[in-house]
Length: 461
Image 1 (cartoon, rainbow, N blue to C red):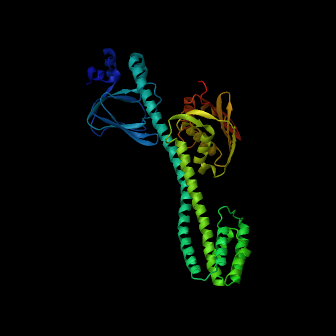
Image 2 (spheres, rainbow, N blue to C red):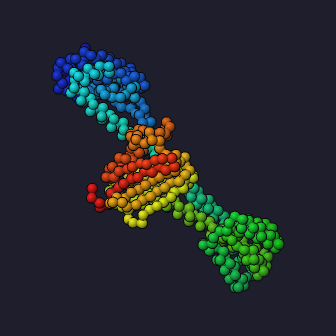
Image 3 (spheres, rainbow, N blue to C red):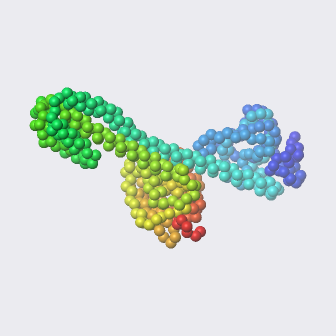
């Protein structure tokens, strides 16, 4: 039998009148639970509220796509609460030790509201805390999911130039062996100063870093001509060398001049050395380009996250947009054409760290998804009446009229199960409001636009 003093020790029931406590106990069922015994199961109808009196219980279930486990101690209230829209228990509950609890049926909530208004108010506050915690979990899960997608794309973007640099470095080692052997061969020959000068001059001209590569058809023609020329001089095994020279746009008559000034064996050694030098120049250019791309991406990541920067700072909106486009390049390059229209004036806003980048990422990512990865993304930034206006549009199918009023609502999504949490645009709106701005939408088939208005840095509130 439950004594009223036990219930008064529960924080939600503290200081309530005796007659109300007695009524509540009279409408409740006392549960005597053995260790391991369940008192509710996830997915069952949410038909009761539970007040823990003794022992230790545990709640377990799936929330926001992850398994959550929490302990319940004497004095805790769990289950469905008054005014809750819960239809089914979102978690299951079981006793970890021998326990006692009161089970109050949800069907009596209307009577509870009438007879115990103070308790009702406290339980509504408890429910608000639950909602905030659930929303926080959902938002954290949404951020992790977004981070996972960005990380996967960036890993791919970084892997391509890293693999190219690694491959070029491996080939560079082979070319260094070739050029060393060719140099030794030339060193054994009695070359005049004029011949040495000619070889060095030719090598220097062939390895210039600013050589523009010809088109594929020209390369094929040059390769055939150089290969035929080499064969005419008895060099039938240098067809790979011919391909390398053709890629550097080296003409057959230049190769012919080498054979006209040197004997066949010396010309061969000189040509092998020159071709190796040409290949080394190309490989070094590839390594420079690849490492430069990696450096640019790392710089974009640092800029995107605002690492090593103050949490509140003046942010160049155009630079912020371009950084976001760099981060999302793995999705853009599949078939999205970006049209930019930036006003050529300073467009600075006072921003909290990288939060504005989250705004651009969510809107641009949604636009790409709406166009199924192929279409036109239009980005415009300009100054208007003390504000920076950023307009992000796409030529996708548009947002239906009946959906538009709900797109900023938490947990509202038109995507399939597992594809979206419905928190992206809710997060966008919260960040924009935090920056004293506002966001507007206009949409019709072929033209959807989000307009974000943000006060210029230094503008009055």
